[in-house]
Amino acid sequence: MLKLVVLLAVCSVIGAQKQQQQQLHQQQHQQQPNSLNRYKEIPIVNLENVLEVDGKFRYSYEGGDGTRAAQDGQQIVVNNQVGTASQGQYTYQGDDGKTYSVSYIADENGYRPIGDHLPTPPPVPPPIARALAHLATLPPPKENGRKF
Picture 1 (spheres, one colour):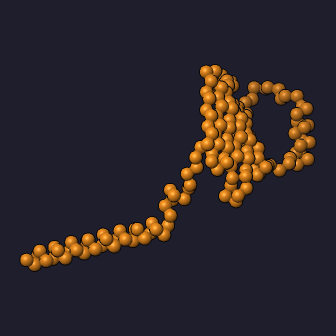
Picture 2: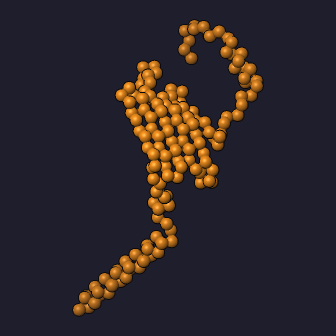
Picture 3: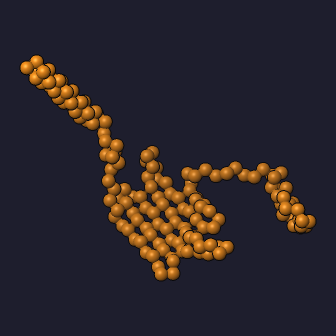
């Protein structure tokens, strides 16, 4: 009989702890918004996606919040390797309320974005520019068998 009383006491303590944990979990969820709910669902109001037989493509979309993107491209061969060359642009509203736009080209020379808000490199110092211009006028070096 004593074993039965102890068993019932242990079960009731465990049940009470579980209920307390569930209540605490619910309170935490009410206080902190679910990380998935912090992003609102934005509908796509316009979508185009075209793939041509010759490898050319274009796509564009517009979101209900004004976000827009478009890209045109084609398959290219550079140095016997197949790749993609494309150009496009996208526009979105930042958390600060400003509208940001980026235009870009992506090809064998890399990804080159242009946007008013993007940082730009500093100008080349004049002595370096003069040295580079002078080096460009020199004839190519002669091969003398050294490979370093």
